[in-house]
Amino acid sequence: MFKSKKLFMALAFSALFIGGCSKDASEVEADIATPEKEPVIEEPVQEELEIAPLTGETVAEEVTQRPIIVTINNHPAARPQSGLAAADMIYEMLAEGDVTRLLAVYQSELPENVGPVRSARSYFVDMAKGFGAFYVAHGYSPEAKTMLSNQVVDNINGMNYDGTLFKRSKDRVAPHNSYITAENILNGAEKVGASMIYSEKVHQAFYEPDERGKIGIETSQVDIYYGNNEYFHNSYVYDHQNNRYGRQSAGVDTKDMLTGEALTFANVLFFEMKHQTIDNVGRQDIDLTSGGNAYVFQNGNMREVKWANIDGLPMAVEESGELVKLVPGESWIHFVPSSPGLQAMVKTQP
Image (tube, rainbow, N blue to C red; front, side):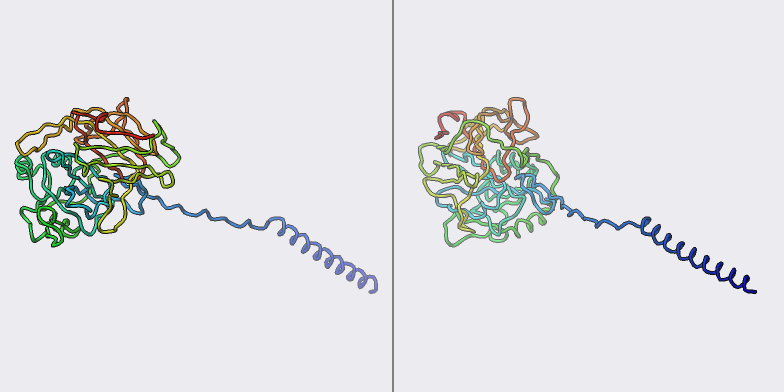
């Protein structure tokens, strides 16, 4: 009896000891099998930025607006003009005699008001066609009237909508007082059944952010003289701090009347083209197709390149035929008569 009780107690103690050991072992195994989890570091999601087709600048949303070209009066009585600051690109060229006009190309944004709006020329219409743009003008030469009547480009003209889509300013006298709002441009497009969706017709080439693009001869200032009239003497001075060119005409800063701010540009280009006087008023015909010499000013440097007509539009090209890369930002482009030519009309300062 005593031996049985002693044996039972020994067995019970052994079972208790073994059970305790088994529990400790399982806890150890659990600790080994379940290591501490490392904290998960979430990388920030980078938003994909879109590139504006005509400026190369980053924008939050894809640009779907069809380009809009407006002929803007550049007579001294029309200055300062309204809406120039919103243009992606501005072309300046002769309209008659030594008087120039501007083609303002809008896509990234539309200004509240644009003008004074002036009349069309045949090569203005050709430029609008090259851009695949909706074209706005007030008046026309005989050649341009035929092209517009034949719907070479989608367009509205102040001759048909004077006092409705186009409004006359009381602060200036005709023909320097016709203006049109962004709202009325879009209303006009709807009236004539023109789509305002971008069809990706024009492709510019731009430097990447890590590309310096400082190529050529260091040049601080460039001047162009259209004839002997000081009102059409334009100067561009490079600002090293903001990497932009300020512009003056007849010694006066080129400003936007809407904002009061002086305009600046990332690129200034000059294309040498054949010009021909076609009537006794002095109207011009400009050869936009044959190609020729060109100057490019960017990053405080000047380069001699070429221009060629690519898909209906004059473009700066390298000797290899590749597009000249532009610095992201707005551009001002001059068309210069081949007689007297670039060397005679365009002057630089180191």
